[in-house]
Every structure is written in structure tokens, then in C-alpha cells.
Amino acid sequence: MKINGDDYQKLKKAIADVLESQGDLSDTYQKQGFSHTWFRWDMYHASGFRVGDGIGIIGDINIPDCADSHIDTALRKALRDHGIKEW
Image (cartoon, rainbow, N blue to C red):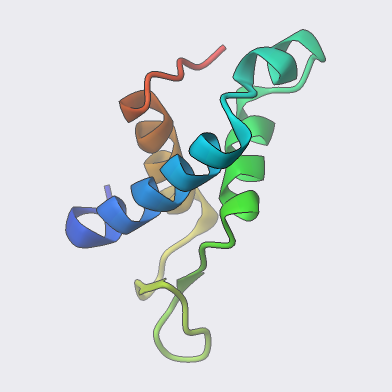
């Protein structure tokens, strides 16, 4: 996983903050027919967390060559760590 260690913990905390403030809306998303992908990216955007490249884009964490797929992998793990299963 490209986002690991302290960087992963920061992302996981940002997701935890959203879940704490808004609750676990995964059942609602699933009942409405939205995908788990949609749900996890909504959680990411709601967190206001930013992944930058450290060159042109400065974020909460900076990882050169970090693609959306790397962020998505970390989001999947963060949600699993919070007990939210994929559907």
C-alpha cells in the first residue's frame, strides 16, 4: 500500500472524524443502490483531507506519484478498520 505508516493513520483519523460526526451511513448508501466506491469517496471528500504530491499540490500528506487507486486502497482499509464491510 503506497499510503502507509503515519500518512495512513492521518487519513484513517480523517475518516473516523467523518464517521463520528455523521454516523455510519453505509446502510443508507447500500439501500439507495450506491456502490461502496461511491460511499468511500464521499467519506474522503467529506473529511476535507487532501493528498498532495509535495511539489505542485500540498496536502495533509504528500506522496509523490500517488494516484486515485492508491488513495482508494487506503480508504478501503480505513473503512474495514472501522468495521464497515464492502458490499
